[in-house]
Figure 1 (cartoon, rainbow, N blue to C red):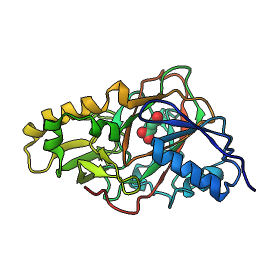
Figure 2 (figure 1 turned 60 degrees about the vertical axis):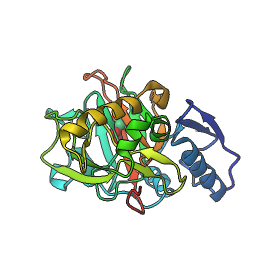
Figure 3 (figure 1 turned 90 degrees about the vertical axis):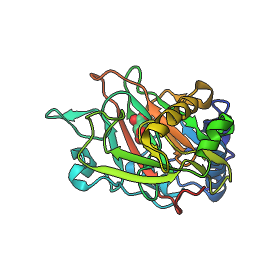
Length: 285
Ligand code: SIN
């Protein structure tokens, strides 16, 4: 069924836009799908408010961006709630049964990261849909890797240009070196600055949670460089902070943005469903 034109309202200077005039529970016509995809490329993160979505809707909308990404952590490390959902929908929640979280990334603050940067083929997009939210906190922060690269100090730029960064992730961990993760790890290396295959723009592709070093440099030499780069990437002027409402569906571009989460009360429920969209090529310089 044909739909009316969508409205795209920017949410900050460099990143984020709200899209109005779309009901994602209905199949999207080609023109609307194209307009959404373009808005996402232009704004990196797009937000749809007041959506009432089944899991099937969530999967259908995700697939309009490409092939669904697979959950990479080994099934033996799945929290129990994963198996109650359609395949490749990830449950992100602090809800516990018998004291054990039923979902992934249950509690509190989370450092900036790119989803699946520790995989050989990191997923290009993530969809996150909110079902239950706490009364305060649990915001998701999105940082533009384009704006951070464009404004990075030239000396730091020269240290990263053409360089491969190393990444390690302990599934479930939310702060580097915490003991919250599982016994399953993902590890990989990719260009520290990548060229986005659709926009042609360059984006910083390192993050505080998962990046462990730079190839061709000792960890002692790389650590202070990376620290300065992370501080720059996370400056408020490059960040959009999303305050969740129930029924928000967000899709972000993992190729040119990182994201983080603020703390929230551990005695209040937060429940989100997440899917990813697989990339078609490895990150390139
Ligand atoms: C994520 O990093 O995928 C989860 C973010 C959130 O819980 O807000």
